[in-house]
Length: 271
Image (cartoon, rainbow, N blue to C red; front, top):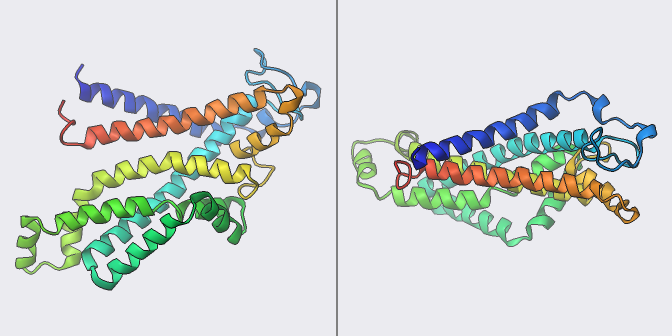
């Protein structure tokens, strides 16, 4: 098996793993992670793989539900952020002048503010909750990808086939749709996938701090926040298993992005 097939197989396995978690949590009946006061504070066992919490809720099913919510929210927010980066990067590079200056200034401004502070401010300003988390993540993760796309398009503008297209009377919009966008699609896809782990971690972070999803949501940030209040009583499993599960999902997205990048890179795609 060559490197390309091996990479494709690993990437497919990662996608399948993430899809299973996302779908399992989405279709999971609430009864599986509902309070059961007869089973409070139970350590991990065959009946409860991740133990139960102070309300008797099964932590395995609650963790899967929380991860599913984080994956779906991260995909939505990252897609919006990546689309915004693509539009702004293309506009800045193709239009130039004042538009390029404004976009570059916005990128520098957003990157100059501490990321967590900006997330909290945006989430708080729009009313927290699900809408607040989605908007906070979507509106704060576009600058890096915008800068990458802008730089790529600026280098493409000087290519001979772009100059030939201009000499034939093609407009900037036609050149962008026909020649520029197809060329930056690989960078866009990799950038989009690499935004997912950041989105998931930051959603969990602001929810943990109390500026994200509501406390009745089975979100990883809520689970970890509640666990911190009870870990001193010896309920270590409330932090350990959800924390490991969150890290596993984030690392899977990160590795998936790197494998997709290897498949799309012309220098490594044929190895």
